[in-house]
Image 1 (cartoon, rainbow, N blue to C red):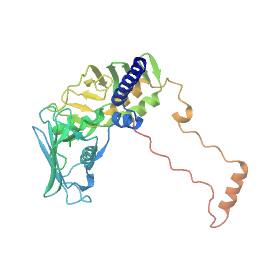
Image 2: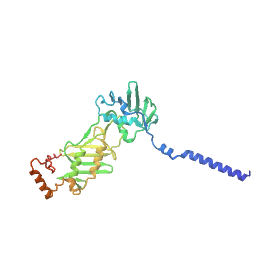
Image 3: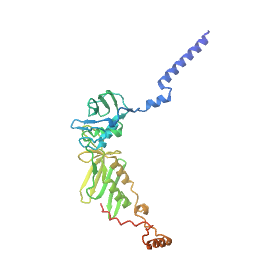
Image 4: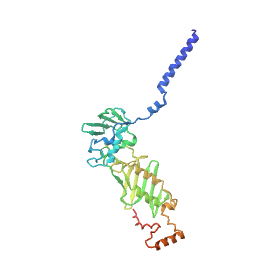
Length: 326
């Protein structure tokens, strides 16, 4: 074999080696790439199989038990607050993991007297410390972190009722969300635009009572930058001045930090209130009933004249009492 042929073989061999190394590092199976880029959910247990649940923080321990899935938790608790956390732990992208810091919330789930698992959330990861899946853990999604950040307040949620009187002015200054609502006689003004009064009154009905998702435990929750503000003045001249997370759903009422995505959404809705006179009459007030044709009136009179005859026409509804102005 001459030198030229040997050189050709060596070049081909080098190219083959380089191509092998490249494909090995890159992965040749598109399915493998997809699997590597997606979190694989692992189903550890069924929430209905849990008969004991303990939630422990530095300042407080909540412990609940039930004989079986068909019985309520004892002591009394909103079952949804327990169920949401069990669902979060039961199915998650578990994998071998090490704690990233000291425990902030310790959780124990019991399936019977001799079978219980204990895990903890350290501010970044949840990991099991004892039980069948010891050493397994996951990083909760942003939307789920608040369930751990509630800490000692995890089972003390309540509704957010913040309108003791009618609102006179409302000002939001939170990043891109910036406006002022004020009343001028019978008119409602958002910034310099007169808005539909029916929309505003209906907004009060929706927004003055909201679902408060969670209070955040300052010993557990991460810092939130509450650079925005919400300032409200009521007709009795009392007022509230809260801080708000820019672009988020966290608020500070002067005493506690809480999370309410519903309330945050309501504030965005008010900024987009329709201008006065632009709401169709059909949505602003009920439309008057259309009078029946003459033939229908005659038929109705004919039926009513017969002894024992049923009236085929629809009965008029009794008038509803006027709604009180909030």
